[in-house]
Image (cartoon, rainbow, N blue to C red; front, side, top):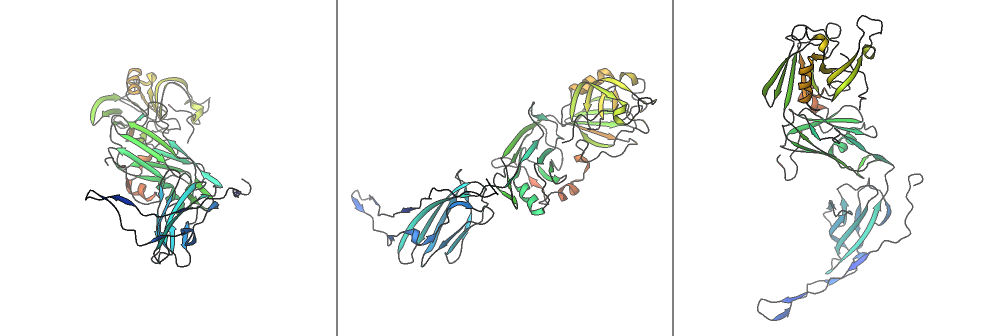
Length: 422
């Protein structure tokens, strides 16, 4: 396509006249008899209405059918290749019909128009047209990546990364209308615009345990802003597992592990010492590494410093991209349950770390309390989404209100290569 223009097809668009003929049927009296001829005659409807055709229809504008002369429009059906009907409105004088539903770019449509001449003549005319191709497509990457088991913890937010910045409020609303979240059981949730290209979705509370969650991006051909239309549709399906909530109390040096509301383990730990205090707040498990190398240089500690370290660490469960983990720290067992001596991570014995590693999954919740550290960042260093109040979360939706995830028939990227700290 040159200069965003579409070459008009040399193929002409056919317009068909449907002739209305009398119908005969068997009567209930047992004999065949002809039904009365309707009090109207067939006419050439193409002479009564103007039906736009061609290959250059602007999808940003309403499609309009108009009556000519003494003609009146009685019915219009406009549908796409999937059979989906585009809604429209007929004027009170029956002289104009205009689409009110959205037209998609680069899409072929069929239109059927019924009309009468005001003198007892009726007919139908059909036509077709194709909308202009989009100059720029808005595509989306959906998260989390469920290429593995597809089962996540109840704290896992849904994410959408757009291919282009969307700043206009109306355009953002269009994007949100093209995003559908359906879950069973259903919850109340909302989108949050982290920036011009990234959105997160979370429920008011955590996801239910053992739930089915589906995310769909369906804006294909839909106008988002001037010159910007939705790209290919995408979908994502995942499940949640048990409700796992971990509480790390930096004041008592204890980790409490709950599954579905029940305490199943209490583990002595050590957290960040002064100057390296662990972040307070709710975090979400980002990944698990059975063996990871941790070096002090990665968090700004010079190699010659007394704080320098270079360690091979086992059973590491990551909770921030900047390098905070829950992991095995056999070198600090004497301080675990008694004192905070780490460089920001939550350390425990080899045996306890292996148990923790085996009993958590991506999306599980880890909350730190009573630390001297800063609050967990809401965005950019993992998923601190749950540290945003629900009221503030909803305010950052373009639509500005919560939505239900009860679907039809239902109930209801930061690099992970950033270095770790210990």
